[in-house]
Amino acid sequence: MAAPILRKFSRTTAIINNHQRSFHLAIKTMGAYDAEFNKAKERLNSLKEDPGNEAKLKIYALFKQATVGKCNVPKPGMMDIVGKYKWNAWNDLGDISQDEAQKQYIELVDTLAGAETKESSGAQSGTDQKFETLAVSCADGIYSITLNRPSKKNAITVQMYEELILALKEAGADSSVVIATVTGAGDYFCSGNDLGNFMNIPQDRMASMAAKFGDLLQRFVSAFIDFPKPLIGLVNGPAVGVSVTVLGLFDAVYASDRASFHTPFSQLGQSPEGCSSYTFPKLMGAAKASEMLLFNKKISAAEAFNRNLVTQVIPDDVFTKETSAKVQAIAKLPKESMSFSKVLIRDAEREKLHSVNKEECRVLVGRWQSNECMTAIMNFFQQKASSKL
Image 1 (cartoon, helix red, strand yellow):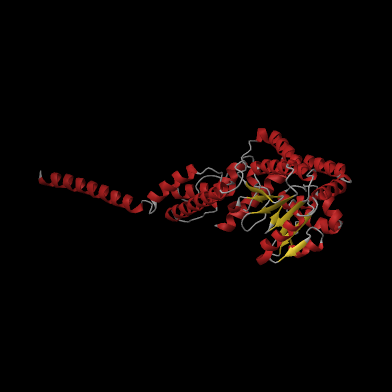
Image 2 (cartoon, rainbow, N blue to C red):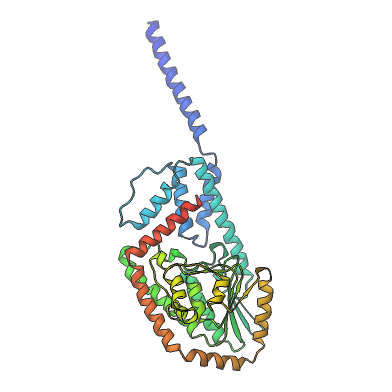
């Protein structure tokens, strides 16, 4: 009888030991950042502003890596564009540990939350709470518009498009305004369209959304064409896409010597806008315009000056001081004289500019719905995400 009892006792002891080992192993393998990770998830849900698709893809990938581990699912098919973005972002994390993924997730959410707090406090100190993506002020006849998404390099969202249209309309109608200026907050003038504008659109709504965005873009460019007063660009840093193309509709453009100008339409499977298909060849000649609009050439501030896109290049360390003095001096010139002169200059080609704007937007609506454009944007996101891992 003793031997069976001893064998049963040994088996029971082994089971208990196995359970104990499993318990200690579970404790040992729990995420080193579990508490902070859970808090980060809560902070992410409390963000008021969409962090943008690039950040959301990285958040998704880090979350999956932290909770599941290395990517272990098949790559989605060609038609599932959003699914492919997500899969690529997760798969690109490779073999990083779940603890490291948790750590990176926490750091990214902390960065986004901190940037939003900073921008919110900056917006609250502005003069006009109608605008959430712009800082707008008006003093001494100068209507100042600042693109105010510095953590996103002032990328233009649908909301910012609408607010810029409103700001230009308000400045044009205000009799106290002599001139208007446009600049950017932070180290960028503007990084162009927020490509989130083109993401997460269901296939069956692509045509209607493309048409809607085409109408928005046409109204946006028209606001610059029809602005009745002198308009001055203060390009404080790199400028990309539509923020570059509309500069041909400004009356003067002052650029910091660290500014650059890039219109990567072909790279993104798109086509020119902002009347640049007309204004750029007129300003710089067909060959130089084609370098930018067709072949994605990025140019420096000095090159932009030589191509007549920029009025003057100013050293960055005195840019704010010198442009402020220039703008104040211009604002003291006879208001009605400048306004009448602006109308005469613009009326000579207003009809042409509106025609060009309409045609550019028509072509773009088609481009946005093309497989070439969608693939190019997806590749752009993948390359950008991979370069930051």
